Length: 396
Image (cartoon, rainbow, N blue to C red; front, top):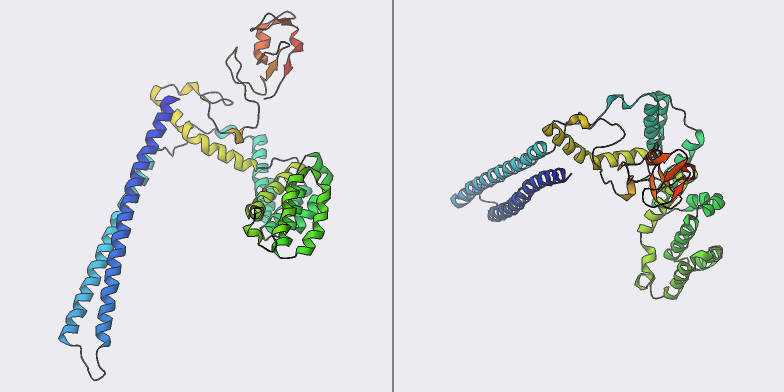
């Protein structure tokens, strides 16, 4: 894996080197072109001034003016030719970056894909992910056509929920919270069970909106609703503290951060998460997550394939369910247990989950089976013996 990392870094540095050359050349070109064009504009303006000195009785240009005209025309021609030539030279540096990328990063994905992977069942799952992504994005017409053509059956309430979600998100962008607040109130009990603070956040933004529009009396009356949200006492104190700075200006108070526009983005994300949660779906699009993970892993996979081809060991990569090396996608893209058995030194999965022994040590299910003799299982780390049926499946 160290060889792969070094190879990737060398490729990135090669592209970075050409990029730095382009930036330097562009800065030089921009400075030179700006100066040349400024000088040209100044010369043309001077010539225009000399022409304005011509009296109405003069029918022809004076010899001096004719000379100035010829000199100005030549200067215009020379400067435009120089700017054009420098611009062409700039394109040479741009094309070099493309060539370096092609030379250092393979675009041949053969060997990384499996044509037979999308059989009838997995193809259906892929189509469902695409349809769901389109619905999440508010592309209802496209989603319905895709569902029809692919023969999928999507429950009507799923479609309606996503349509309603996109409507509420668009309303929030325009600082209209009524529809989102109505939805939160209708699902109050479900949101409480999930320990969601969406309803409070929407009431908070509604209250701040009244203050922002100078409707102070209405804001004071509206604040009575916060009595139902005692678990947010500290935030409520800050909200009520805004009244002390109405005359002086809240923007100059310690509470100015409450009016940050980022609050709308936060409540939009929270709304999308809660709607999907109540539908039993992930708060992120599965299609988007898969593509993100693929984009992160692809450079490493290409480098692995290149190393394997050089060492003529492509046959090692034959298991569909496991990669030849571990690729760190970040904690945000971890959705299942990650555990490597210390006995067999294998990654645990659905068919071989981690098991907790009576003594507290954890090994894989396959390891428990190999260490079992009759009805006795002895822990490989301590003297404890137990019935193998006492081992419990655990999740990380």
